[in-house]
Image (cartoon, rainbow, N blue to C red; front, side, top):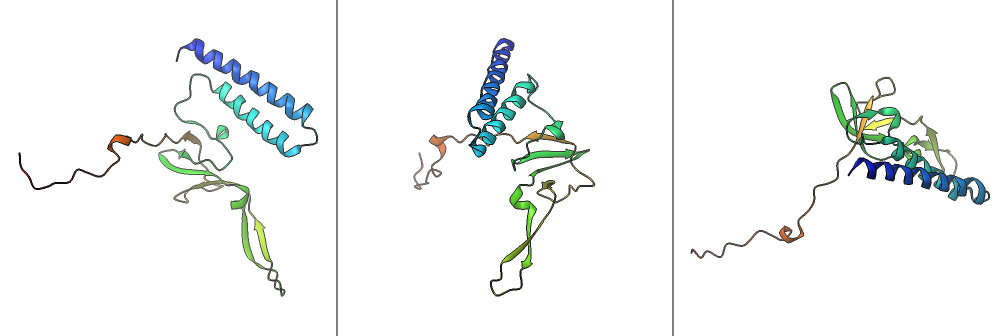
Length: 154
């Protein structure tokens, strides 16, 4: 992709972001859920437009997605996969009400980075992140089983 193409895409993202913010703030005044969704999309477009040409490599943890998206996390030489905890993960069942209905009771924990190996903590958080690479491409022509040996020799 040429620099001109990147500048053009950046301008388009900024323009789309402005349009979405206008709709969210002026048209959807009564529809708070859709307005918030548009603001989030606008924020993502803003982040994409400010990413510039440097879209590969480690990024400061402050720029990481906070929506449960799995990413590579790093601190020093330690690298693992993890995500920012979602609202559902922050709600931990601690028992029930003790009454006849046995309604569950919950405790809410502060959101934090959660890694697969459990190593990052509030006291020792990750410092950098990187998007996960896409999965390997699959060749549909080769997706069948291996050829069978019929015992014949040529």
